[in-house]
Amino acid sequence: MIKVLVVEDSRVIRDYMVYLIENDPELTVIDTAASGEEALESVRQHRPDVILMDIHMPGIDGFETTRRIMSSEPLPIVICTASTHFNEVHTAMQALEAGALAVLKKPRGMADPDAEAEAADIIRTLKLMSEIKVIRRWERKPTSIAPATPARPSVAAKHNAAMVAIGASTGGPPVLLQILAALTTPLPVPILVVQHISPGFIGGMAEWLATASGLPVSVAKSGEIPFPGHVYLAPDGQHLQVGRAGELQLTLDPLRQGLCPSVGVLFRSMAERFGPRAIGVLLTGMGRDGAEELKLMADGGALTIAQDEESSIVFGMPGEAVKLGAARYVLPPGKIADLLISATQPRGIQGDGHG
Image (cartoon, rainbow, N blue to C red; front, side):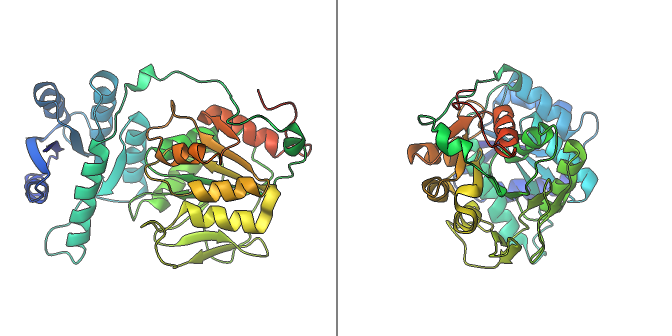
């Protein structure tokens, strides 16, 4: 049985979430808390496997509670928020920075037409996140640049980047921010991003990234021509691709590996449209979305990068890419930003790639 701690100040919502969780045979609610202080005490007493955490509570809020848990007794935390307005999403993203693994919208009750889907999303997320081994945030150490395969200076030197594509899932938003904020000057090429996140949050996430990084970030619109230095996020429920003229295309194609948007769809279109002028980056996340297509990009001469295991919350997607030999470089976020800056300069990447 997976032991769940439910932290929620509203009695009605708390009881409803307990009801949903207890209806699943693999989950059990070991305790509930109505405030951050109660949650901290419950963590010490019960040591749950996963925590479902409210954002706004009396006393210390969900962000501060998350920060304290992740710096002392780290556990998998799923943030649950009542709204997807900017202020709410901003706080939720701060909680992800502090170490929370995922963010969900609170269920609106059994009378809501989306009640069944919302309940299934909560149950699925709690089960998946309970399996993740989390660490104290302050214990993470920086790693140095290291090529995943023997460097090929001649290929790197000839690289003439046209566009950057980034794929991420669990743990992705804080890593995306770290990379974007480290771009000391806007790249001379557009950046396209597929981030797996619960429906309703992508717009607020774009605002959060723009505010925190200082770069122009928006949700992609079908048919628009992407500008250099701008960041475009795939919207909810639509695949993001690059068209023949370099325009952004949004499609409602079938799910790929159960996902829409899919990193793989974006990477495949990058390989087909730009070949050796593409750059693909695969960040932290569960599963294998994008790994095979990153290999397709690499085989076509593109510059391919995977986040390293030490800095990844989940080494699923980038790990699969490494197994396939799809990533020419395996790097922590700061070094990924450095490489993107170097790779998009007019002369391309200089040196032997050892950094």
